[in-house]
Length: 165
Image 1: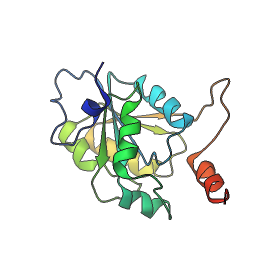
Image 2 (image 1 turned 180 degrees about the vertical axis):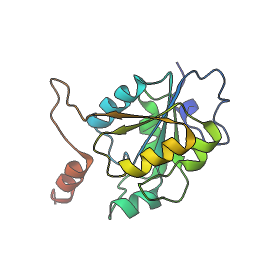
Image 3 (image 1 turned 45 degrees about the vertical axis):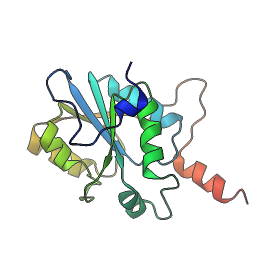
């Protein structure tokens, strides 16, 4: 098993495509890591041999979610990389395109086999067109809460923290 630090990469240090098998990519803010994120990564891993998670950079997160991120980029990246289902993680360092796409150069460089999204993603139409233009298969997963877990969201957690004073 790879150490967490060895799972943190940049586009330049990402391993060569051959030997990675079927490659999947997913993206997100992952500001306050919570159980829904872990479930999502496990769902994503079902579609690929190698899962690469692009963690939104602070500027992109701030555009999407005013007042955030609460955690700095390196910390969010480390926590995502520490999860077992994640093979590699990197900070998305690109300008945010319509549809919240922040990994276009990475996808052009790596040509992943599959891009995985939640089926309620607000940028679904743009991401579908993005994938079709590059020959990347788009897979959708539903948000599920496994037995024994309580539904939560990062937004709810952030709100609780703000109201804790």
